[in-house]
Length: 476
Ligand code: IFM
Image 1 (cartoon, rainbow, N blue to C red):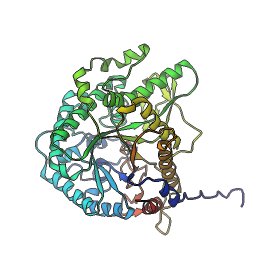
Image 2: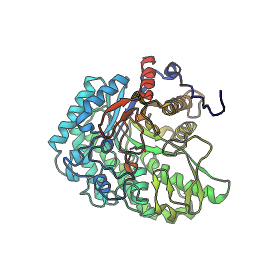
Image 3: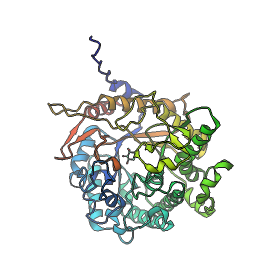
Image 4: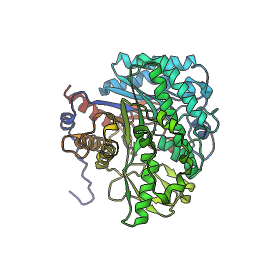
């Protein structure tokens, strides 16, 4: 072999992974309305419709108007899931499509769309996991989650959707990644609604979590038979060095990224904050204990999204964040440090499957018996996939990524594993389709299925065929 010949990575054996998957373990794909549906302003507008209309907000100048046109092509997309052999599909109900303006009765056209999509899933025996909020706040709700009233609006919305679709949804996820909404949307200004409030964004934590609690109550009041949970994104956090300064900032980041969203939901209290950091959390200090009772609802499952670990150092740095550059980052007392020892995804995120096991172990160690059964509700990677002249898309990195992460999760929860004791019930690959990746527009492809954003043609990638083989070879 000549020195410049790069050996192609060996494709992980689908049969070997299939044999590690326990019977009954749910495997599916995940998407979100604003990222795939298009027809986004057919009823009401969302804060993302408004943000993407502002010049300079989205890296490639794209917007939410068409994305993957799933609104028209949902039947083709469900057929793809069926070919894949997926057990379940995690999608989100678009709040502004179902309830334009965020108040009042549900819109008949919105109901009709989700009815038809759910019919299609039922016809293919694919279990629906529905997220009620995946970031598309109705634009009319002015300051959004800074306002306590948005939590009340969201609770009402959940009740209406619960009543209307009660018999059709197997699992309900109230919120998706409230951490990303607070950090990217309100603290750093990368995501909608584009606020740069840094620690003054903390009221959005409380209001989103209150919205979660009210939504869970409303779903129970609607007697939905489906299970009820929430999805948080977790990132194990490490200090860049052994210095006390870096350790303190790593602890701070762990609190604002992980604990402040999981502790109230599972334990009914905000995490203890060291005295020297307490002034930063003033905005949470006055939280009403009755709200915490509402937030801490009994849950049937906990959704965990995992993408990467985080390394933190003290002191202001550049504006680099995992989701793009944010000038506001430079106003923080810490910065994120590149983790160079791992290969990276197209987004530059470290590929560190073992840390998925760490994230699960942290959940067990922190929450013990308060942790309900867990689903990994998102995990996946973007790569610069290329369409070969014969029209095929070979994405060996994504195959290796999915294989390594699913194995890491299963190994971690196995007897004697790092997260032994966690009741892990399933895994959802992010994502079914290449889609609209928020501020990164169409520049990051996460799909098992390639989408040509000019023609909207779908082409399953090699990773789709590989996962199809894994699913087909499972023990039932
Ligand atoms: O695309 C997003 C998704 O909407 C939420 N979790 C992370 C994904 C990749 O950035």
